Image 1 (tube, rainbow, N blue to C red):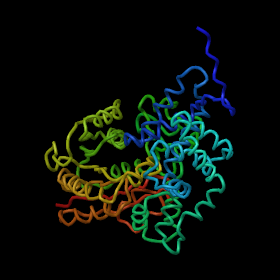
Image 2 (tube, rainbow, N blue to C red):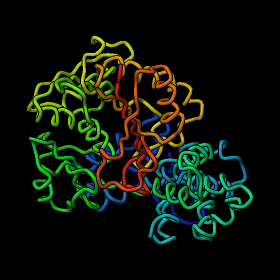
Image 3 (cartoon, rainbow, N blue to C red):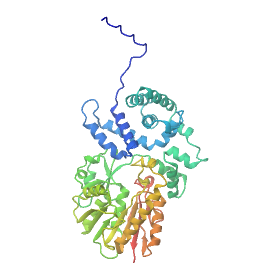
Image 4 (cartoon, rainbow, N blue to C red):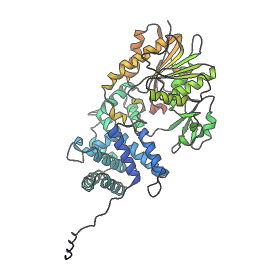
Length: 475
């Protein structure tokens, strides 16, 4: 049989196999997990980075790779609303008709173009290469065309084009410029009480990378010990807080690895300290954390209780979260117990405790710096689901505390429907209760308002937007 002649190649560039960029591949994988599985980036990213560091060969990560991957993931999620508006202006179809994986690659590319110092040509070429690997050559051409349009202007120029003027629609303007859903902008504005400066500063703070804050658990570690770590500086408000400057790694701190210290926002520390230091009438022997998961406040309360010889009961409804609480409290020097129990169906007798904390489930609008994807998942109707639970937990907390005892109602949301509205309604149902002024229990902390409750803010205090009300049972 005679050999068939080879078909001549068509003229043009030879086919080149797409090159995998491990940093951008990891960032894309994290975004897909957030989108497909409703995962949180702060839970998805660490194991991905750990796995990448353990690899041998050319795909092995170093510290610079990890920092870039982290910035790409969090930066893209924080600015998703802004980037969606820009991408929508560059495509010929509604965004809902763009496949989610394609949109993730585009968003990663737009963030590199408009939110980092990566040169435009490198941002476009790296994004197109990622598209070739994960989407195929056909859709990579679409990505290339869109990103070349985006690259024609900088972020300020794009915002001027896609955001409505402030004077015509202030809420929509802020929503696009600062990448928050409109309803969240409106809710935060109401909580602040008005004024353009305050709302813009808050929204901008939500888009900043938060510092890592450690807590030295009393009797087990000291702030001085933590300050001996590289990149450590004192906290602003809590006497037990130490902040790690950029690049500081909590897992590298010996006291954290041993459980003698932990990662805990300073606002969370202040809530626990305010309850522990609130004035009581009568004994101070039994404390309750009624919504203890994942255990940060419980660990601090347990350490403070141990110093006074008091007992802490830490209760958490979800068994797996109760396990996290037990891990956080492991090694606590004083008496404590962790149980899996529903705070709306108490496993204890009424009037059993001297101090009670209920850090209730909420929308989490106060922690958008740490969980940027939460702003896109939450809906206004979610408030209706939380409302009865929040009121029920506070009512049961007031029944759990003895006469003369104190309850701390806390939530990581500044939304008025989850803060003052809950406290006001419960006070009407429990006339034998008075609201204490919480401000003196946060000494040195400025900008606490007219009281008696306290609202912390990222742009004012550098903390999550924690809310605190202290209630004393009088009869």
